[in-house]
Amino acid sequence: MPSHHRRFTKNKKMNNYTDSIPGFKELITGTVLLPGDTGYNESRAIWNGMFDKKPALIARCLNAVDVSRAVVFAREHQLQIAVKGGGHNSAGNAVNDGGMMIDLSLMQNVEVDPASLTAKVEGGCLLGAVDEATQAHGLAVSAGIVSHTGVGGLTLGGGFGWISRKYGLTIDNLLSVDMVTADGSLVHASAKENQDLFWAVRGGGGNFGIVTTFEFQAADIGTELYTGPVVKRFEDAGEYMRFHQEYVRDMPEEMTIWMVLRHAPPLPFIPEEYHGKLVVLVPFVWLGNPDEGEKLIQPIRDFGETIGDGSGVKPWTAWQSAFDGLVMHGARNYWKSHHLKALSDECIDVITSFAANLPHEESEVFIPHMEGAPSRIDPLSTAFPHRNTPFVLNLHTRWLQVADDERCMRWAREFHEATRPFSQGVYVNFLSEEGGDRVREAYTEEVWDRLVEVKKRWDPENIFRMNQNIPPD
Ligand SMILES: Cc1cc2nc3c(=O)[nH]c(=O)nc-3n(C[C@H](O)[C@H](O)[C@H](O)COP(=O)(O)OP(=O)(O)OC[C@H]3O[C@@H](n4cnc5c(N)ncnc54)[C@H](O)[C@@H]3O)c2cc1C
View 1 (cartoon, rainbow, N blue to C red):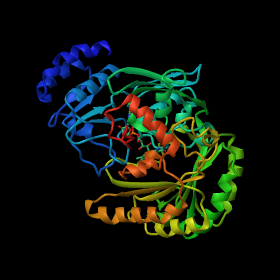
View 2: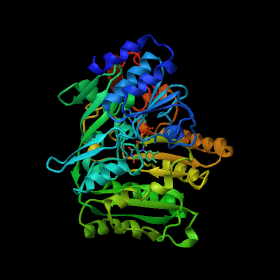
View 3: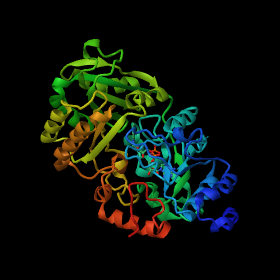
View 4: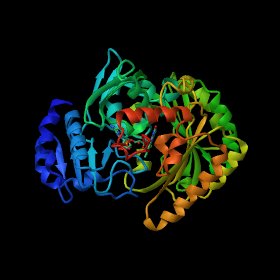
């Protein structure tokens, strides 16, 4: 047991946690927040406005030792632990009612080593901070597409974004982690050390401990890239999707082209008469010479009618926050997702008919194209086995009023059910609260069994269970 625990366990006899709080406050360098304290409400707030949970106490940690002491305190007082990285997960697992929330959001340091193209990122960082620090050297870590998403949850579930077709998933670029495990120990895991743990944290979520530092391989992508959305008419969505699904699969891995069905935001390159109307956005990123990228995008512009074109060479950090405004904190969200076997004609028909009835102007249907470098990696080498997926179907169901909950959630459930025949598994980070059987669908049986073995070894009492849980038995 690490030495800092010994001091703490002297207090073990105090069963009532409230009596122990003054001692706990002295033990950690961060802050302990109780209901009513300044900052308590800000800290417990998460991205999905559907959740309003109130932890008994919040440990806002500043370093790994704080995290360890918080874990030990929670165990001793039988407080359920919730861990907040970026607080972005739509399932709302970063916060609990009546337990201890371990808030990592003050742990935001990023250290880049341009010589080895690596970055050490603290567990509470947001993606924007990683982009900012790595871009100072023209580098980037393959990760997600919204700058206010947390690195913690995103990485532990897998992580993908605009450059993963070329450079792999976020976990494929993970070199090591520093973690606090269920007994409060500080543990390093990599391909050489604690290999079972390192395997499990690459896809198995927060089930095995709290990651205080991630070490990533970065890629040299430069600071400006040819990116953009081309905008098509929604009336042509079915026909366009039939073309799109073939065209994007033929693209070199330097080109990533996705598709979004939504109401047009009031962007300058979209004619005013389309603002607020259903459209098809075709955002893309090209890792190469802009002239070559332009040629590859031209057939998309030429297919049917193009009603708007926002393409151009942009700073990478600007592109990485281009979607932020469409998914701000606080709205009500019920996200559902599938990996798709293919965008077959029948699947396209179902998608376009549900998309024609999006339940709110903030809701959208998001269809990333996945295959590339991630698909070449052995599906058993990490705990992210569903790697041979051409497309993901994400139902980003968002709305603002409680009164719309039932209507919007029903739309998502019915859409999700109707597309189930075309699905093959799911990405664990896109699950809502959908029950244990559904969590298993994020894994294959072989990977699940192995995750359970690792869980038994590192967290046999299921201390870390506010997550898409992998129970030890
Ligand atoms: C708007 C939006 C955009 C998104 N875009 C992408 C995308 O482009 N690509 C992609 O792959 N995913 C994307 N996601 C999904 C995203 O990966 C998950 O929501 C992820 O869980 C967010 O991580 P977080 O740290 O912000 O979340 P949190 O809610 O803080 O945490 C999620 C889970 O991870 C655990 N956790 C968080 N940090 C740690 C840590 N350091 N150690 C141990 N456990 C931890 C938490 O306990 C919780 O169970 C997006 C989500 C949203 C809402």
